[in-house]
Structure formats: structure tokens, C-alpha cells
Image (cartoon, rainbow, N blue to C red; front, side, top):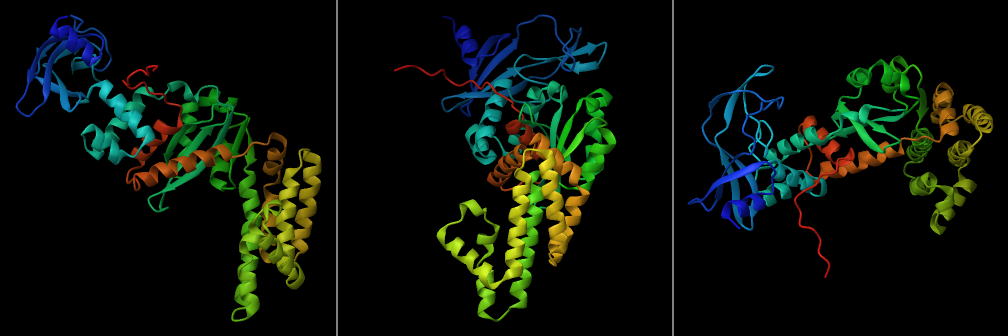
Length: 411
């Protein structure tokens, strides 16, 4: 086997001719290559175009061989493309604007999916910021333009970053269980580009939208999705009652400040907020003590649990009856936080009943947000929304990479 053939197989890239090899003083292996095709192609559109002139030699970093860094060397031609003008020619081993081979970038993207960028930078011998730039190029190559087609069930939620002072709006596809769109901000106007990408036909095709109780997302959905029904997430509805219960408990702690009863009430937080079916012996004992000694707090607890049971109904008619009864009870409870919650639930009743009928929640969105938060934490935060969105698509949009890993062997 000739040395050039061996090197071509070692590189592992189709459409490449090896012209020579040079071991440099700094220990790098420099392989001189050129495209296998004879007529040059435009680096932007990929069409054949006449050569214009030749640029100075460039190099592209490739995967190392053991501990030896490898780079490909070539003097690219400039082409006069009728559509794009004068451009540098396309090469089969890299994309326009990159100084790394596509195989190298695929490995970087694969590692970024499973570990933090700092370790990826150390393993691949590049800087942290370069890893982030490579991730953006990998996402641009692999993110399917068809992800916004045939959408019918979507979820919209927000994700906070940079110490909760900046936000992303994230849109997920409930059927394919992946993220399809994201942008910085959390206002109704933030979703404008998403609806523009969908177009009138795509907006008409959406049937259900799961959201929290944020007014901005609701307004955006009602204004742009004519056939969509808004479904309010059950978790956020139940959280209204849990927050109201905790507000009642904290008010009682302040009222009883300095007395032994204040300590007792303070220590009942998790017993009150926990689901009734999962209480341990100590929590049941504390809850029983609340029932005997503090009727307003126990009333608040019953209101929280009754709302949960109302949302468990599978028949919308029975759920409506239970919710209307709950609203009446909450308004008569003389507990100000629950009076506010009753007004909120009455206002959003159609969207809550839509959940009862469809059982659609934002659980998928919350789960993907938890995954994204783990990614942000292992990178110790992101300063740029673009870098975070690129990592979001890389890990949560069903992008599957094919890195040049060795095939498993049977032993």
C-alpha cells in the first residue's frame, strides 16, 4: 500500500487526494491535500465556477494520531461564481469560514453533548470560546429545517440564565419531544419571529398550546394561532394554591412571633406542601397537630388538596363542577391569598378545563429546561444567549452526530 493511500484512509474523508506529508519541528504532522474534483466549486453555494486565482496555503486542524497533532494543508483557489461573486472555493474536508475539518468539529460537537466545554477544550486542544464557535457551526449543519413543519401540539415556556436576569423563550414539539425554536426574551413580541417562520399555514395547523399563566404568551398565542386552544399547565395552577398556603403559614408565623406556637407552625411547611399520599409518620403527626390547634392553616391545607383532586377528574363536566365549588369555598374562606387564587382560576377557567380534556402539560418543557439548566451549571453559566441557544439545540433538538469513533469489537 502506498503512503499516500495509507494517509488518505487515515484522514477518513472522501473526495481528498494526498499530495505529500511533512513532520514539522513543533511535532505536528502536516499533510498536503487537494480536492479530488478538478473543476472548483463556490464555497458558498457549492456550484461549479471558473477559477479566479490561488490564495496562499492554509491549514485545517484534523483529529490527532495518538499524541501527534494533524493538520491538512492546501492553497485554495478563488472562484468567480455567477451567483455569489468572487469566493474562496469549497473544500470537501471543511466548511466555509472554519479552520477545522468537519470530522474534527463533529467530534467536538459529540463531546459537547455529553460533557462540559472546559473538558472538551482540554481534550481537543482548543480554547473554550473556540469550542462554543464550533458548536454553533455543528448546530447550523445538523439542525433540521423541517423541524417547524407539521407542528400541531406545542409548548411555550421561559428559561432564566445569568443569575435570573436574562430569559430565553423556548418552544417544544410535544409529539417529537424536542425543542424546535428558542430566542432571547420572554415577552409576547419575542414569539413574533417564530410565528413568521411558521407562516400562515403553519400557524393555522397548530391545535393546542400548553403554557403557564403568563399573560404575554397567552396573548401571543391568541393573536397568531387562530385554531389553537390554550392549555394551562397543571403544575402552575397547583402552584398557585401551594404558594397561597405557604403565604398563610408565613403570615401566621409572623403573627405568633416569639411564642412556641410560631416554631410549631414554622416546622409544618413540608408537611403542608407535600402530597397527602406521600407523608411520612412525622409529617402526619405535624399535620394532625395543625388540624387540632390551627383551623385557618388547616383550612388552607384542605383548599390546596381539594384543588389537586378537582384537577384529577377526567370528565370536563365533573371537573367544572368541582372547580366552581372550590372557587366558591376559597372566596368564602376569609384567607386573602386564596381569594386571589380563586379570582385567577375563574379568569383562566377555559384553559384549565382544556387540560382536563387533553391532559396536555408543560412537563416536557420543564424537563428540557432542567436538562438545559444542568448544562448551564456545568459550564458555570453563559454570558451569551446565542451560545446557550446553540447548546440547547445541540442537546435537546434530536441532533444525532456520527463522530469518527472506533467500531466496537466482539471479544
